Image 1: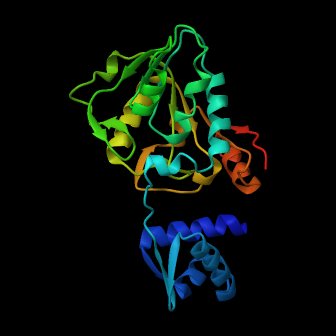
Image 2: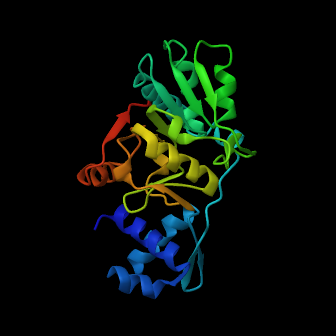
Image 3: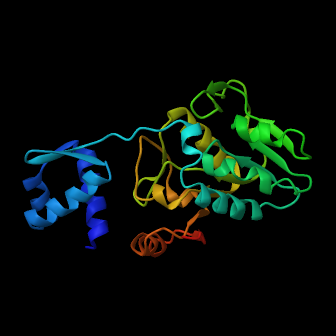
Amino acid sequence: MYTLERQQHILQYVRNNKVVKLVTLTKEFNVSMETIRRDIQLLVQEKKIEKFYGGVKYIEPVEGLMDNRLTQQLTEKIAIAKTCASLVDDGDCIFIDSGTTTYQMTPFLLGKEKLTVVTNSLPVAFDLIGSNIEVMIIGGKIRHSEKSVTSNDFLFRFEHLNINKAFICASGVTLEKGISDFSLEEAMTRKQLINISQTVYVATDSSKFNKDVAIQVCLLDQVDKIITDNKLSKETLKQYTDAGIKLEIVEVGS
């Protein structure tokens, strides 16, 4: 087992068990205490787990506010968003969700003809006001941290939509659990749009891979393609391609 792969399995094991003794990890993964300590030290540095005498415990991830995340991996997000926009054809009806990566698509869509954008993102809707793009905002409760609209079952008939392409963000991507998000309401909205969309693209930077956060959105077999940046490790790239997952790698400068 590769080092990175073992570390991800260790993280998953600690996540599942919350608190684990180091000696338990040596037995579970059949490696020496020295090897486990090296792996644990890296996971501690990445603030994924917390170490205490003789063991470790899982640190539950916390989602930051959208405004704070807009500048994180910005170069990668813009490059990914530009690639996503290139997949949109004149006359399409597309869904753009409320993530910070898909938000970057808006300037690259302005030249499209007869385009309809369905979104639950207020920033996306505001950016497209005044353009020749028809915008449909999903009605419901405002989620302040994401500036998005959720809890919309009683206000919006999803079955009336004919979505050609859906562009979904992810807070976490794993082979085992698929796409995950921090918000149950956000995940429910994405689930419904995925179910009715002809083609589903996941737009996410490489930092989200091998992370499983609070709520599962969908398994990877419900996704047509994941668009990410070229900072994805060779190990991870091989794991996903060997599993039959379609990835489009966007070149981003150092």
